[in-house]
Length: 296
Image (cartoon, rainbow, N blue to C red; front, side, top):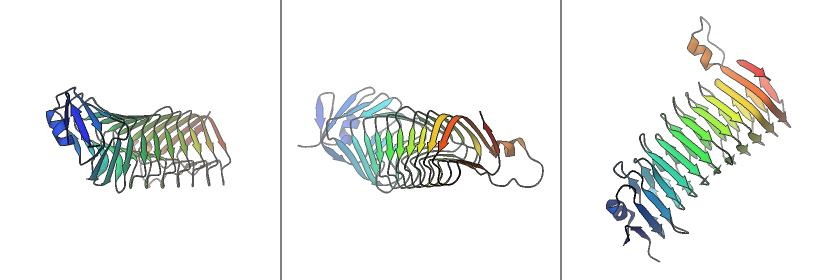
Protein backbone atom coordinates (compact mmCIF):
# COMPACT_ATOMS: atom_id res chain seq x y z
CA UNK A 1 0.00 0.00 0.00
CA UNK A 2 1.16 3.52 -0.72
CA UNK A 3 2.14 5.74 2.20
CA UNK A 4 -0.50 8.44 2.50
CA UNK A 5 -1.21 11.42 4.73
CA UNK A 6 -4.86 12.48 4.64
CA UNK A 7 -6.14 15.88 5.71
CA UNK A 8 -9.62 17.31 5.08
CA UNK A 9 -10.63 14.24 3.08
CA UNK A 10 -7.74 14.53 0.60
CA UNK A 11 -4.93 11.94 0.58
CA UNK A 12 -1.43 13.24 -0.14
CA UNK A 13 1.61 11.17 -1.00
CA UNK A 14 3.94 13.16 1.26
CA UNK A 15 3.95 14.57 4.77
CA UNK A 16 5.16 17.92 3.45
CA UNK A 17 2.09 18.30 1.23
CA UNK A 18 -0.30 17.21 3.99
CA UNK A 19 1.20 19.71 6.44
CA UNK A 20 1.08 22.48 3.79
CA UNK A 21 -2.65 21.90 3.32
CA UNK A 22 -3.46 21.59 7.04
CA UNK A 23 -5.06 24.37 9.06
CA UNK A 24 -4.85 24.91 12.82
CA UNK A 25 -6.76 22.19 14.67
CA UNK A 26 -6.94 19.84 11.65
CA UNK A 27 -6.34 16.10 11.86
CA UNK A 28 -3.78 14.42 9.61
CA UNK A 29 -4.27 10.64 9.29
CA UNK A 30 -1.11 8.80 8.37
CA UNK A 31 -0.81 5.30 6.94
CA UNK A 32 2.20 3.39 5.69
CA UNK A 33 5.92 4.16 5.99
CA UNK A 34 6.94 7.77 5.34
CA UNK A 35 10.51 8.99 4.95
CA UNK A 36 11.55 12.55 5.66
CA UNK A 37 10.74 15.11 8.31
CA UNK A 38 7.41 16.31 9.66
CA UNK A 39 7.87 19.98 10.47
CA UNK A 40 4.98 21.53 12.39
CA UNK A 41 5.43 25.29 12.36
CA UNK A 42 4.08 27.75 14.93
CA UNK A 43 1.26 28.57 12.50
CA UNK A 44 -0.41 25.15 13.10
CA UNK A 45 -1.50 25.10 16.76
CA UNK A 46 -3.75 22.24 17.84
CA UNK A 47 -2.77 19.96 14.95
CA UNK A 48 -3.65 16.29 15.57
CA UNK A 49 -1.67 13.54 13.83
CA UNK A 50 -3.02 9.99 13.99
CA UNK A 51 -1.14 6.95 12.76
CA UNK A 52 -2.93 3.89 11.40
CA UNK A 53 -1.60 0.52 12.56
CA UNK A 54 2.03 0.14 11.48
CA UNK A 55 2.42 3.75 10.31
CA UNK A 56 5.86 5.32 10.63
CA UNK A 57 7.93 8.41 9.93
CA UNK A 58 11.66 7.92 9.53
CA UNK A 59 14.26 10.56 8.79
CA UNK A 60 17.87 9.87 7.82
CA UNK A 61 18.85 13.10 9.55
CA UNK A 62 16.54 14.01 12.41
CA UNK A 63 14.37 15.34 13.71
CA UNK A 64 11.68 13.09 12.24
CA UNK A 65 9.25 15.42 14.05
CA UNK A 66 10.04 19.08 14.74
CA UNK A 67 7.16 20.73 16.60
CA UNK A 68 7.23 24.50 17.13
CA UNK A 69 3.43 24.85 17.43
CA UNK A 70 1.42 24.62 20.65
CA UNK A 71 -1.15 22.00 21.60
CA UNK A 72 -0.07 19.41 19.01
CA UNK A 73 -0.89 15.73 19.56
CA UNK A 74 0.67 12.79 17.71
CA UNK A 75 -0.51 9.24 18.33
CA UNK A 76 0.12 5.70 17.13
CA UNK A 77 3.33 6.25 15.15
CA UNK A 78 6.79 4.73 15.03
CA UNK A 79 9.17 7.71 14.83
CA UNK A 80 12.75 6.99 13.84
CA UNK A 81 15.87 8.90 12.87
CA UNK A 82 19.46 7.90 12.25
CA UNK A 83 21.36 11.06 13.18
CA UNK A 84 20.92 14.80 13.73
CA UNK A 85 20.28 16.19 17.21
CA UNK A 86 17.20 14.10 18.04
CA UNK A 87 14.35 12.04 16.62
CA UNK A 88 11.70 14.33 18.13
CA UNK A 89 12.54 17.97 18.84
CA UNK A 90 10.34 20.53 20.59
CA UNK A 91 11.98 23.98 20.61
CA UNK A 92 11.12 26.69 23.13
CA UNK A 93 7.50 27.81 22.73
CA UNK A 94 6.34 24.51 21.25
CA UNK A 95 4.17 21.97 23.06
CA UNK A 96 3.62 18.39 21.93
CA UNK A 97 1.85 15.33 23.35
CA UNK A 98 2.93 11.91 22.11
CA UNK A 99 0.48 9.06 22.77
CA UNK A 100 1.28 5.39 22.10
CA UNK A 101 4.29 6.24 19.96
CA UNK A 102 7.64 4.49 19.71
CA UNK A 103 10.76 6.63 19.31
CA UNK A 104 14.13 5.33 18.09
CA UNK A 105 17.21 7.30 17.06
CA UNK A 106 20.35 5.35 16.29
CA UNK A 107 22.94 8.13 16.69
CA UNK A 108 21.34 10.93 18.73
CA UNK A 109 18.79 11.81 21.44
CA UNK A 110 15.32 10.31 21.30
CA UNK A 111 13.17 13.24 22.49
CA UNK A 112 14.82 16.64 23.02
CA UNK A 113 12.69 19.35 24.59
CA UNK A 114 13.21 23.06 25.16
CA UNK A 115 9.46 23.73 25.09
CA UNK A 116 7.01 21.20 26.57
CA UNK A 117 6.42 17.56 25.73
CA UNK A 118 4.20 14.90 27.31
CA UNK A 119 4.71 11.20 26.58
CA UNK A 120 1.79 8.91 27.42
CA UNK A 121 2.10 5.15 26.94
CA UNK A 122 5.17 5.62 24.75
CA UNK A 123 8.46 3.77 24.30
CA UNK A 124 11.80 5.51 23.78
CA UNK A 125 14.27 2.79 22.84
CA UNK A 126 17.84 2.22 21.67
CA UNK A 127 18.76 5.86 21.06
CA UNK A 128 22.42 6.66 20.42
CA UNK A 129 22.58 9.34 23.14
CA UNK A 130 19.95 10.31 25.78
CA UNK A 131 16.46 8.81 25.64
CA UNK A 132 14.49 11.84 26.84
CA UNK A 133 16.14 15.18 27.66
CA UNK A 134 14.74 18.47 28.97
CA UNK A 135 17.13 21.34 28.17
CA UNK A 136 17.23 25.11 28.60
CA UNK A 137 14.05 25.39 30.65
CA UNK A 138 12.19 22.60 28.84
CA UNK A 139 9.53 20.44 30.50
CA UNK A 140 9.06 16.72 29.84
CA UNK A 141 6.22 14.72 31.42
CA UNK A 142 5.96 10.95 31.14
CA UNK A 143 3.16 8.61 32.12
CA UNK A 144 3.06 4.86 31.53
CA UNK A 145 6.14 5.26 29.35
CA UNK A 146 9.22 3.03 29.03
CA UNK A 147 12.65 4.55 28.37
CA UNK A 148 15.09 1.70 27.76
CA UNK A 149 18.39 0.60 26.23
CA UNK A 150 19.64 4.07 25.35
CA UNK A 151 23.39 4.63 25.05
CA UNK A 152 23.56 7.48 27.58
CA UNK A 153 21.19 8.33 30.45
CA UNK A 154 17.54 7.34 29.95
CA UNK A 155 15.90 10.58 31.17
CA UNK A 156 17.85 13.79 31.85
CA UNK A 157 16.91 17.25 33.12
CA UNK A 158 19.76 19.63 32.34
CA UNK A 159 19.96 23.38 32.91
CA UNK A 160 18.22 25.96 35.05
CA UNK A 161 14.44 25.74 34.87
CA UNK A 162 14.47 22.38 33.04
CA UNK A 163 12.00 19.88 34.50
CA UNK A 164 11.35 16.17 34.21
CA UNK A 165 8.04 14.98 35.67
CA UNK A 166 8.10 11.19 35.62
CA UNK A 167 4.66 9.96 36.58
CA UNK A 168 2.89 6.71 37.43
CA UNK A 169 3.86 3.69 35.37
CA UNK A 170 7.05 5.13 33.93
CA UNK A 171 9.87 2.57 33.68
CA UNK A 172 13.49 3.64 33.09
CA UNK A 173 15.57 0.52 32.50
CA UNK A 174 18.64 -1.04 30.90
CA UNK A 175 20.20 2.25 29.82
CA UNK A 176 23.95 2.08 29.26
CA UNK A 177 24.76 5.00 31.56
CA UNK A 178 22.37 6.18 34.27
CA UNK A 179 18.64 5.74 34.55
CA UNK A 180 17.64 9.30 35.50
CA UNK A 181 19.76 12.45 35.87
CA UNK A 182 19.36 16.05 36.99
CA UNK A 183 22.22 18.54 36.71
CA UNK A 184 23.20 22.17 36.00
CA UNK A 185 20.10 23.26 37.95
CA UNK A 186 17.70 20.78 36.32
CA UNK A 187 14.80 19.44 38.38
CA UNK A 188 13.38 15.90 38.49
CA UNK A 189 10.13 14.75 40.09
CA UNK A 190 9.37 11.02 39.99
CA UNK A 191 6.20 9.45 41.39
CA UNK A 192 5.60 5.68 41.30
CA UNK A 193 8.44 5.14 38.83
CA UNK A 194 10.66 2.07 38.41
CA UNK A 195 14.35 2.75 37.71
CA UNK A 196 16.08 -0.58 37.23
CA UNK A 197 18.94 -2.49 35.64
CA UNK A 198 20.77 0.60 34.35
CA UNK A 199 24.51 0.09 33.79
CA UNK A 200 25.81 2.77 36.16
CA UNK A 201 23.60 4.82 38.51
CA UNK A 202 19.86 4.50 38.92
CA UNK A 203 19.47 8.17 39.78
CA UNK A 204 22.24 10.75 39.43
CA UNK A 205 21.81 14.22 40.94
CA UNK A 206 24.45 16.92 40.98
CA UNK A 207 25.51 20.42 40.23
CA UNK A 208 22.56 22.34 41.74
CA UNK A 209 19.92 19.90 40.50
CA UNK A 210 16.90 19.01 42.60
CA UNK A 211 15.04 15.75 42.91
CA UNK A 212 11.83 14.57 44.55
CA UNK A 213 11.28 10.81 44.39
CA UNK A 214 8.09 9.40 45.90
CA UNK A 215 6.92 5.79 45.91
CA UNK A 216 9.73 4.81 43.56
CA UNK A 217 11.59 1.53 43.14
CA UNK A 218 15.30 1.86 42.36
CA UNK A 219 16.40 -1.72 41.64
CA UNK A 220 19.51 -3.62 40.51
CA UNK A 221 21.49 -0.75 39.04
CA UNK A 222 25.07 -1.58 38.02
CA UNK A 223 26.88 0.84 40.32
CA UNK A 224 24.90 2.80 42.96
CA UNK A 225 21.15 3.10 43.30
CA UNK A 226 21.26 6.86 43.90
CA UNK A 227 24.21 9.24 43.81
CA UNK A 228 23.96 12.85 44.93
CA UNK A 229 27.03 15.04 44.41
CA UNK A 230 25.18 18.34 44.86
CA UNK A 231 21.77 19.94 44.92
CA UNK A 232 18.77 18.83 46.92
CA UNK A 233 17.15 15.39 47.05
CA UNK A 234 14.03 14.29 48.90
CA UNK A 235 13.37 10.57 48.75
CA UNK A 236 10.15 9.41 50.32
CA UNK A 237 8.21 6.12 50.64
CA UNK A 238 10.62 4.42 48.27
CA UNK A 239 12.81 1.33 48.06
CA UNK A 240 16.40 1.08 46.86
CA UNK A 241 17.26 -2.58 46.33
CA UNK A 242 20.05 -4.77 44.99
CA UNK A 243 22.45 -1.99 43.94
CA UNK A 244 25.80 -3.47 42.85
CA UNK A 245 27.84 -1.16 45.11
CA UNK A 246 26.09 1.47 47.27
CA UNK A 247 22.37 1.94 47.76
CA UNK A 248 22.57 5.72 48.32
CA UNK A 249 25.84 7.64 47.94
CA UNK A 250 26.05 11.29 49.02
CA UNK A 251 29.39 12.48 47.74
CA UNK A 252 29.75 16.25 47.21
CA UNK A 253 33.06 17.61 45.94
CA UNK A 254 35.19 19.12 48.72
CA UNK A 255 34.25 22.73 49.51
CA UNK A 256 36.91 25.27 48.51
CA UNK A 257 38.56 27.05 51.44
CA UNK A 258 37.40 30.52 52.43
CA UNK A 259 34.04 32.12 53.24
CA UNK A 260 30.89 30.37 51.99
CA UNK A 261 28.20 32.16 50.01
CA UNK A 262 24.52 31.24 49.97
CA UNK A 263 25.08 29.85 46.50
CA UNK A 264 27.87 27.56 47.75
CA UNK A 265 25.46 26.24 50.37
CA UNK A 266 22.85 25.50 47.71
CA UNK A 267 25.40 23.64 45.62
CA UNK A 268 26.12 21.30 48.52
CA UNK A 269 24.34 17.99 48.69
CA UNK A 270 21.20 18.08 50.84
CA UNK A 271 19.53 14.68 51.11
CA UNK A 272 16.40 13.82 53.10
CA UNK A 273 15.25 10.21 53.40
CA UNK A 274 11.71 9.67 54.66
CA UNK A 275 10.34 6.10 54.93
CA UNK A 276 13.03 4.70 52.65
CA UNK A 277 14.09 1.06 52.62
CA UNK A 278 17.58 0.24 51.36
CA UNK A 279 18.33 -3.47 50.99
CA UNK A 280 20.70 -5.86 49.29
CA UNK A 281 23.45 -3.39 48.34
CA UNK A 282 26.79 -4.93 47.33
CA UNK A 283 28.75 -2.65 49.70
CA UNK A 284 26.95 -0.15 51.96
CA UNK A 285 23.29 0.75 52.08
CA UNK A 286 23.85 4.47 52.67
CA UNK A 287 27.27 6.12 52.45
CA UNK A 288 27.61 9.85 53.12
CA UNK A 289 31.00 11.55 52.72
CA UNK A 290 29.77 15.14 53.06
CA UNK A 291 26.83 17.46 52.55
CA UNK A 292 23.74 17.31 54.73
CA UNK A 293 21.84 14.06 55.25
CA UNK A 294 18.60 13.65 57.22
CA UNK A 295 16.53 10.54 57.77
CA UNK A 296 13.08 10.45 59.27
